[in-house]
Length: 159
Length: 159
Image (cartoon, rainbow over all chains, first blue to last red; front, side, top):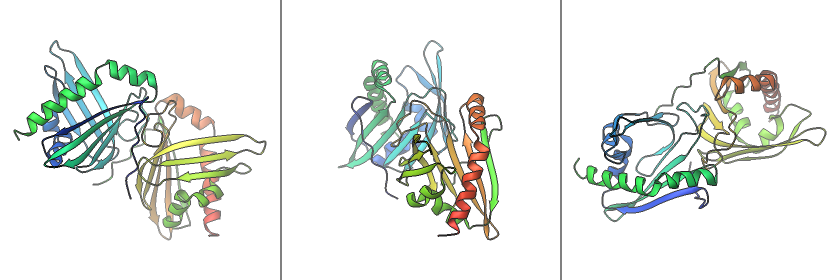
């Protein structure tokens, strides 16, 4: 079964593409292991106090983010596609177990390709309409996803 | 990778469970082959004029249903999980390619188990809230999904 093609729509999606100097097997581990995710997944000084991962289609991806002034954000996602070291897809349009969710915001697709000794890293956020894309861009998609990628690369070099 | 458990919620889901006297390999074929789907998928006198199936996660499942008075209903779904002869999952909470959809109504899960020479057939529709479940029940879920199952069983005996 080949993978379905992922085709970004510039009006609806946001795409961060970078080459990083760590192998994709380490990037994959960083994305799919709760104790690793907790170390890099939210821009400092925010931090992750809990992360749950059931790495299979329909499984849960849950994080609890905490801000410096006691703010807390709990996110529930449902994994859709898991191709080790290549593609990781999850969404909040479905709850874990595939139930349609009340307030869908995005589907996220991480694509990893070998690039010399490093990795071509592509993070895509797909939205249902232009307003949601714009909202996500104004929330700081590029800065936020770029910052946590820097944090991840620095972190995985220490493990 | 084991499959995620499917747990119905009686307040949110609708479940049709039946034992049918055809092997599950035939039921699987009937659900996953466009020319077969066209023969049984909508209660007569409605009929299917077109069916598109890209049988992989993120792939399209599209049908065009036609009524006796010229009515037409086009449905787009996204496949989520494909376990041959065992489990087929799709949703309209995502468009094909995983983009969040505007108006999610259901995720459907067909589960097939061997039962003697026949099949234990379970069709589940999952909804986001009680109002949607009620709406689907009033639209005639049990009668509709039961009728097309009868049509499918009669049809696959002829192929």
